[in-house]
Image (cartoon, rainbow, N blue to C red; front, side, top):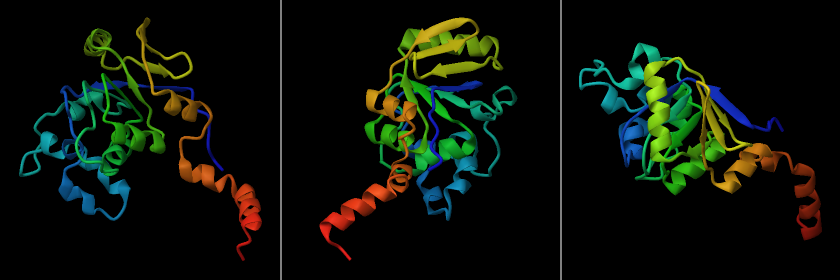
Length: 198
């Protein structure tokens, strides 16, 4: 249908520090009763960003220099915990379109891929250098190249890794299973005819 081959992502980065950041921290359970996923963006990391009165705690996501950031950087085992689809939805609706970390929880990784959010891994020393570059210039553009498996920032090039099945899905524009299904209506009709269903 409207699938597009995706080879690169670019944008400002924001570093949310921490290992084992689980899906309940990403989007607290009380926000799961939303009517549409579009409502989730403002609630991303809500309990870490706001106090009980709704006043800002000065979280990194709310810093002026990180407004409009599109690439989230974190540490080990990002997205662990419950398998709620709302976590990657909240990330996407907040405006973030890619995640760099040391490692990801498997189900979170799969949910992100389905939404078109690439999860790429980068080792600790490289991430530390990338974060240092961002601290020097928070407005520096980060480029994630899925074809070459590289991240480029301020004339520095870093190696990244990505689950190969997910990488192929982005490069072939097949990461959305619903889109794949809708794109195969003729084939589905042919198979259904062979099966003899009315």
